[in-house]
Length: 370
Ligand code: NDP
Ligand code: GDR
Image (cartoon, rainbow, N blue to C red; front, side, top):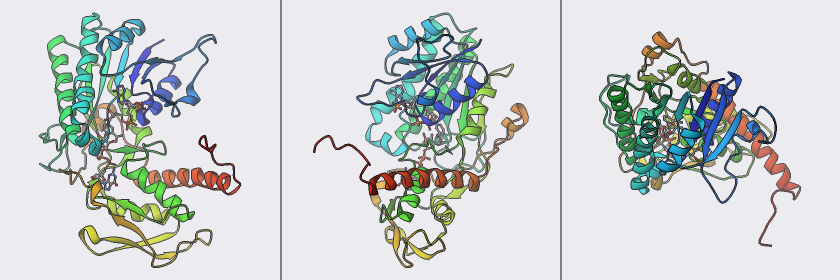
């Protein structure tokens, strides 16, 4: 039975990848951070009581800033594959926590690679590094492929640049099977709530249900190549099943602006939006609402700009060319953006319908401070 170790198992990709590897018969180990409240909700459905027999899903406390901890876990697990997905993954937040981001996202990768080397596992353990389209940053060429020059535009992007190159260096210096997946944005119903797609689909559902008045966003002009996280974790696994280690772009090849994504999400609920005005004064106004269940008035301003969501330096346009991955790994995305948006809006609608029902019935949450 193959053993995999996933850092960042409690995140969006970690949860989907753990599901995929379990379905392929792996024993899956994951590193979770200690937190003052539960942080495993994305993988709780995979949890197995450690007292049972033949448990194939195990969590270990750890942190990418702690090399001794990483070394001990890797020594204990002796993994065939490590997927280094752990990171402070929010680009805007990285401007506020640049040193921490450098430590975890940059040096954290070095710690994993060096642990494998020091433990003498270079010929046993294959490593996947979660690299990112944020490496491309300032537009040099479109679409972006494995040969496009990097020009990161945030502390996150710069930390991931270090991680990218240290992975290449360990592969070349120590003959390790280490790969960079240069993944473009990928989303899902379990996407973190502060990334723009999920922020939009949550707000669309809440506004339709009368639980929120307005959605505040930053740069509506930014364009991203959005895919489905379920498709992308398959590509991660495929990279480690090849004869030779290599680096691959994973993308859909289609780019969409934040503004158009907002329109798509509200359309799913029968709410037609129009954007009027410019710059910080741009607003999204309701033109029509075809669903009688939602009390959204025509003319209501439901999207506004909050400059706090703008980044000091922005990545304007990302669109990936995944031909290498298609040719070498036989991978193509199964989901389109309209399918992804529909799935996310439906999931958030369901979530908030439940919350509204409980709230209206007076059963929503316990108030500890009453
Ligand atoms: P998430 O933010 O959903 O998950 C990040 C994971 O990393 C969480 O499990 C988090 O733990 C963990 N983590 C954070 N800090 C540390 C730390 N100091 N030590 C150990 N673990 C830590 O990200 P995604 O699942 O979306 O992304 C996975 C990886 O892929 C990340 O490295 C991200 O940068 C990269 N990436 C993501 C893309 C995307 O579009 N989703 C595109 C390209 C790259 P906790 O749950 O406790 O916060
Ligand atoms: P990104 O994703 O920065 O591309 O990084 P995010 O969803 O945060 O932003 C995408 C674009 O939307 C614009 N934007 C807003 N973004 C957020 N979060 N909140 C807003 O209110 C808002 N308004 C406009 C942003 O300026 C940006 O242009 C994601 C992360 O998953 C990284 O870890 C990963 O490496 C990259 O994708 C590829």
